[in-house]
Every structure is written in structure tokens, then in C-alpha cells.
Amino acid sequence: MNSSMEQPKSRETEKIPEFLVRRERGLEAISKLLSEGNFEDIGDEEAVFMLSLIHEHPEREDEIMRQLKEYKPHVADQEGLRDRVLKALASSEGGKTSSDETGQSEWEMNADVVRKHIVRLVEYFKASPEALGIKKVVIIPSDDILRPQTGRSFNVSGEVIIMSRSGAWDNFDHEFLHSIINPVVENAVGQLSDEDKKMIIGLASSNLKHDQMYGEHPESLLQETIIRTYVNYIQEGMPRPDKANFIERVKSLTEKQFGKIISENFVARQQFDQLGIKTLDDLLSNIDKYYDSFNDNKLRERVYDLLKEYQSSEQSFGDFLNAHMGTSLER
Image (tube, rainbow, N blue to C red; front, side):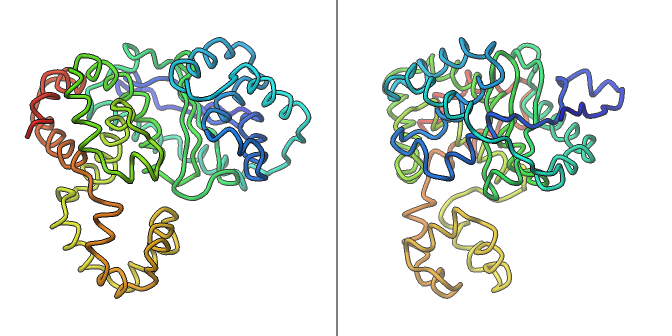
């Protein structure tokens, strides 16, 4: 089912690309196959998702294969994997999930909210979707195929494809921002010295590099850190994400707030389990160990300072990043 979202006619809408909500059978079917343990031998779930975008859209194949070659060189026999994914999808059964179960109905009812989020993000970073080649934003309702607080996004020939659960606005912001931040960071990092690139890697948290498997790739680490810092800290009006402020925030938690984190935050729950944290008192007793293991991220602190400084600038974020990247790393 395809449903274009109604967009009010205003000067604001001229700043943003067309957006619509629809399901894609390739993404839906591959999510089910992955949940059943298929393709575990590949070791890169995102690569499998990317290849599923070709199912029913063969016009995407050249661009998807180009991106795999450039961004996923570690994935062996990419042509063979493409054939394997498409064969699996061709024999998979179509889903019969209702639009309420997928979240499609809610996305369609919140067209105006989607528009406001896109406008706010474009305006904050002073970005030009047209200059970035963003032609269309396609929202894939994913309530039935994604865990809470997870999402995915792909940019194929100017079509930004976002998998997100309904109502997960922080996740939607995060995934849409990849279409703005990724090219800006690639340009800025491309102008840095090898020493500066090593500094980015050194400043990033071990958790981000290894546990979350972003590797030691300066572009990926910086892209993810800028997006997370904006969405989780700047946008929320949170204080600088350093150890002192983290400890203060944890000490102010109530039992009810801690329980909500346990029930709703899949990543935090996994981290707590690794350290045997089951209660708020456990967290308070292990606060230094928890911070050092999962939250210590000097790159995030530098990015927070950079974004705060950027807020008083008249430059686009891309121009500002090019002008200040080097000095920000050396602070």
C-alpha cells in the first residue's frame, strides 16, 4: 500500500523533499528471515538489508552494489550474497500484517508532525536537501519488524529510506539526519590529516568502536557521534555529556524512572545485564564502572562543544565543520 502524506502548502515545505509512507516487501521479508537466524554467517546485517532493497526495485541494483563496494569492503563475495538474498526473498511468503500493526496508520495520521521534524532538522543544520541530492523521503512503518529504539536508513540515488517505529521521533530524527550529516562529515574528514583521523578514532569510546561495531573508521565514528549528540543532548537541552554531569543525572533518578529505563531501553538493559545491575542501588554502586565501560566518550564531549559553538554561527553546519574540525579535536 502506498500513501503520500498530505503536506500543507507553505514556504516551509519548499525547504524539504517530498515524503511518503509505504511498506517495502524486501525489507519486511528480510527482517523476518534475519530474526529466524538466516545470514548470521555474513556478520553484517546492514549489508543484507541493503541488498533486500533491490527486491522489486531492480533499478536500485547498480547503486546498492556501488555502496557495498565502497562502504562494506569486508563483506566477501558481494555478488554471491546479492544472489543469495534475492533468491531467499523470491521464495519468502508475503506478510499479511495490518496497517495498525505495522504503524502505518499512525504515520499517516502524523504527516504534519513528520513535516515539522524534517523542517526543524534542515533549519538547525542550515542544510539544503536539494544540494545534498535528497529527492524523496520514504518512511517504512516498522512496528512489527524492529525492536523499540532501533531503526535503519538508506540513501539510494536521492531516495532516503527510513525504517522506524511509529511514535519513535528521536529515532526518526536520528535516521533522517544521516542523509544530512553523512555527506558533510565525509567531506570534512577527507580534508583532515592522517594524524587528525587517528585522533578521531582515539577520542571515540571503545564501546562505540567495538561493542557497537562501528570499527575504527573516522567517518562513521564522527557521523554517529554528531547525530547522537544532537538528538540525545542538544535537542533535549541536556548538559555536557561528561562524567560529572552523568553521575549527577544518575543520582537524581527515581525508582520509577530507573524502571522505565529497564523496560524501554533495550541497549541500557543489555549493558546493565553485563555488569549485573538489576536495581537503582546496583547502578549507583557501579556508577564509575558503568560510565567507564559504556559512556566515556571524549569525542562526544568535543562534538557537544562544537555544536554549542555552532549555534551562534551564521554558517551552514557543513561550512562550520570544515572551518573548525581541526581545532575542535585538539582541545
